[in-house]
Length: 345
Ligand code: SAH
Ligand code: SF4
Image (cartoon, rainbow, N blue to C red; front, side):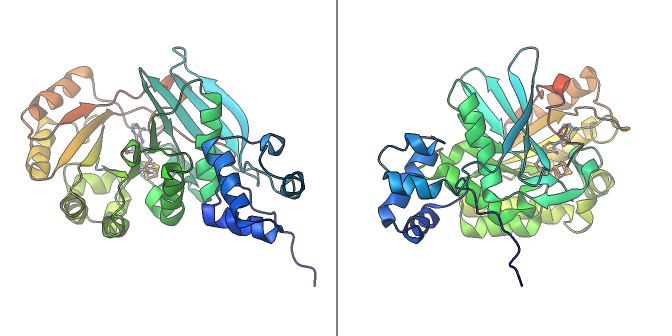
């Protein structure tokens, strides 16, 4: 029986060891793999002809392999030009989005980890797509590499906050973070890489146990179990207090701060009573609280008015932890938090 045709893997997404083995399997020396790693990830060159220290014969053999797993399909630039949303096609034609944000010296890229999302938060546009598939390591990484090529300035920060739940594609997300951080490759500082989870408790525990130095953010979005159950059904299988405990345990074991994200939804979780509960709940945790006024999508949720946001924030002034507010940029082009969704998922 004929073997089904399988596309050879693209080079972006391969680890140092995999590229060394590839070099050997193509009849070259192991160190050629290291040179290839340097071209792809450190020099970020995607044309074999420019990889001048590789032999012509080796370059010739490499042409059987594509470098990029993603194809750039479209881009949307906000009026201020500070937020740019990019649409990429996977090799099978499915689509994902990534966002590039400029804020002074800080250039942040927001990466997707899945096509769609299974978590089904009621307020999020990605949830409406349902879960389609996990992204490969290469597909996660290529969003960064292609946007770095487009960006006139060096990307300073990476957030795994695009489409999908990173902790439901745990291995690929962590391996992509390792490749972003690799000192012989892209060499992004671990503290500049943030992974955001909706609260998959077992994988928060795993992340803690494995001792990674990337930053962790948890999308709390409620001040108690009942409230969270209404907007985030995942709370049924990952109870609220279990999530708080897993987060606290992370900070104690890692000696690192955790960020709690809190999307403010009008008349759902924006009462000053909620702010008081948060102070009590998070007061003993080494954390930062990031308030995100809701970015409206089709649906019934609304952003609280300015007065309610101000009142909420003034209660939080008494909190023992730092509180920041994130006014998502790029809402005009649907590039704000929770607005990413592709029709051709
Ligand atoms: N799945 C991960 C990461 C992607 S979502 C997670 O949920 O953490 C990134 C952030 O956007 C999360 O904090 C999420 O709560 C928030 N978010 C989702 N929909 C939003 C919306 N419509 N407006 C503002 N923030 C939203
Ligand atoms: Fe998935 Fe995060 Fe959206 Fe929830 S908020 S549906 S976890 S992408």
